[in-house]
Image (cartoon, rainbow, N blue to C red):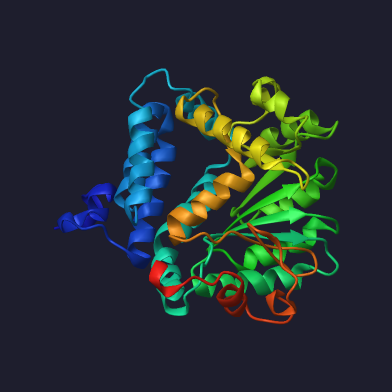
Length: 359
């Protein structure tokens, strides 16, 4: 039998079992490359096939339910997500879509999950599947970020959100190149994204840039990234006042012409819990109703839900520019919960401890 004549999707499910490991990743890359190459022959069929791939590689009920929901939503020929997909594949570098997608979707949500859950059970602690780091180029510099990612990958964490709080972003390029199995989302200001910086950060194809919609240069920056076929999304910070603009839909309609991926809604430090709940519910309803050709997410609630779904525990974690752990309950004060002083696993064991009976 000649395997090269068998469609990759069949090889992935050979013998009724989904293949894992390096062979599976190679076949997955081949399948996605073929699908993206043939996108013009049937974009709707292509996205349905890729969702089916996601179903086949799901680990656990929550992931399987997610892909089944998407599959059901795509039964509507008029789904706004088909518009999203067609625009995204037409305007974005295919190698970036493939690499970032596999790193986050396969490495982060499939291969890393087993190790992550085993360590969580062994050490009676939550281990997040998505980790946020506040980068300022000074106290939290490229070496600090590299240290967190290096330790995180050994725990099964392959998705990182880098929040830019100062310093040269271009300095992080070697970190992204040195961790080719991970996916990174960079929350950046448009003023920090000159052409050279964009090229350096994205050349390894495992980065999604996120542009602040709160700057006057927002539209110009987005147009420039689209012209360069860069994978990017947008974000905004909201408070109790700005939430009205979001809940009315006017903010989404304003940014919709400039982005074809994600729109992240980030609550500021002073926003009320009731406002966050309303914004989170609005984002969820927009996704389920396929209201817009982009995916609207509340940064705090939806990242927390992703961590709970994959890790099976409440375990959101952020490291601030001093290296101190921030959990869903707020910033910690214990020096033992600082990445400068302790290892990542030690911090999770103490800062995200769980009673054994709940594991």
